[in-house]
Image (cartoon, rainbow, N blue to C red; front, top):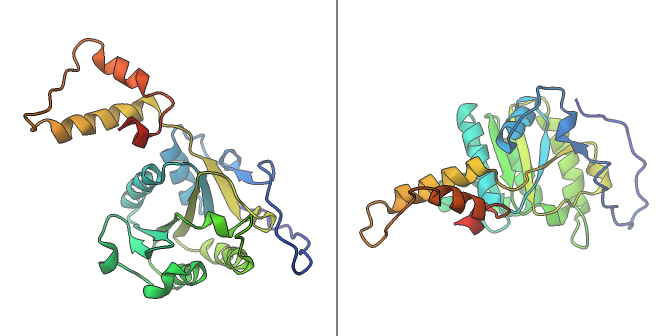
Length: 231
């Protein structure tokens, strides 16, 4: 499991140092069979009870879809935290699915709510990264994350933080596992294309022609894009 070697504390008033990529734990360090897709890697980390996984990706929706599939397969609930809605059930009406009360828009209270919940669940935090490094870093949030990481290790709860770039204070480098999600693979674009075709097939104003090599040319043109950009 994670290395608990202590680090010297910073003098009061000193801003936390941003962790360098080499200092953060990478998913390759997990002692399990090598996963082949980001979803499989996430599943491996969650099953191995890594308490906090930091996913580097611009695609919040794609990460959430992967986590929803993992949660369903593991008979867990998936909750999503944003600074505007607090903690809500993924895929449901936010105003009717809040957990932990209306104060969970506060990141510290949201993390308290994670501790208070006893049922198996995955918690996806979408707006937490600005609080963990840089000008907006919050020492209380950093301390709370360390406390919560210790708590969830022995539970069936997991925390996933998604961010377009890695912003981690050095204090958290032993408690967080970093996973770079990467751009979608051809299979992901193929599934997206199938979904789009299914959505518009009954629309008489839309003509779809994927004969010959049209499909392959579309998939090739999407390389290097996010799924959102490809849509």
